[in-house]
Image 1 (spheres, helix red, strand yellow):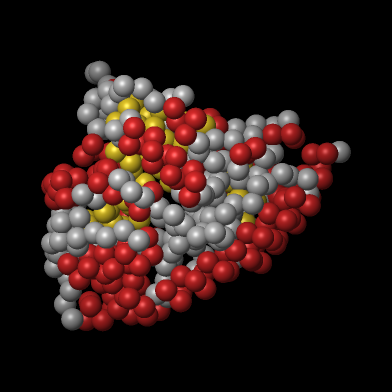
Image 2: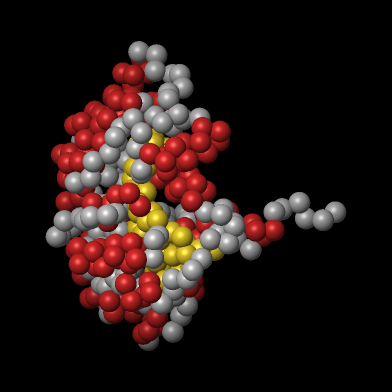
Amino acid sequence: MKSPIARHLIGVPRSGIRDFFEIVSARKGVISLGIGEPDFVTPWHISEAALFALERGATAYTSNLGILELREEVARYMERFYKVSYDPKTEILITVGVSEALDLAIRALIEPGDEVLYHEPCYVSYAPVVTFAHGKAVAVSTRREDDFRLTRAALEAKVSPRTKVLLLNFPTNPTGAVLPRKDCEEIAAFAIEHDLVVLTDEIYAELTYAGGHVSIASLPGMKERTIFLNGFSKTWAMTGWRIGFACAPPELTEAMMKIHQYTIMCAPTLGQKAAIEALRHGEADAEHMRKDYEKRRNYICASLEEMGIPCHLPKGAFYAFPYIGHFGLSSKDFALNLLDQENVACVPGTAFGSSGEGFIRCAYAANMPNIKEAMSRMARFVGKLRK
């Protein structure tokens, strides 16, 4: 029997993060700095809003676009935090996390052979999602020496007549890099000149530690060519609620909604109710968590530097991306040996693309006692490597 698997899927690898944590799950006593999931529990008042909605019978489908009340809150939030105005009736779609929003956007935009530029190291889903849509994902490498900044010059070197979409993620998973206003303006000019649609995943925007966050959607001439993605998983520790949203011009929102309508129907009703409460009354919760992550960031980066592991200071998200290439081990071997010898789990940098070789990702979404113990164990491991 011939393989029934679609040819375009055969070459797509499994997630490097999930593969590594299949190994981790078989061990006991592991301190994990691996999964990008807040160790905080969803603030109680947000969960309580969902429980209250459940008690009142909110168990039916919602509009395909999502509860209008939530879309209105998203519009107010976008205006307040990002300085961009969207019509909640025609320009906002509530999705099953940002992952679904990303898939919808790519499928709504890409035809076979279209190219999507994306910066690397990057979140594991970007290139596969493009492949699933029969497009071609084109990586643009960023470098530690530049604080993993994305420059117009690097983009110009990879753009082609087939390029249709530029995919951005700032602050970035796994590097914690941000997009300063000057770089943002240059990249916006690049997108306009080459007539590209920009797909911007800003799930970590609220976890920016200095200088404030600038969305490319807020710049002149960009809203009409940008699909903005965000959600509630990181900012309000709501990973399991699976609520995200996409903001885009009406024709793009309509195109995404068609796919969403036929494949998902609507995002979880109770999750949407919880999201309304998060936007209305969750600002203090988000700020509390951001400040705590900043303390953890400072500790983990200082600890890495003390043990002789260079690590640029991430300006956003909750990941450190230290360079371990000078130890003579591949990223995967370093991570596996650290796990085997010290029961500390970090993700090999190659899980985030070939540009990640020589690095590991350490998520400081773990609590401080675990971070301190993990750093102590890692220092012991590094000491052995130097002998």
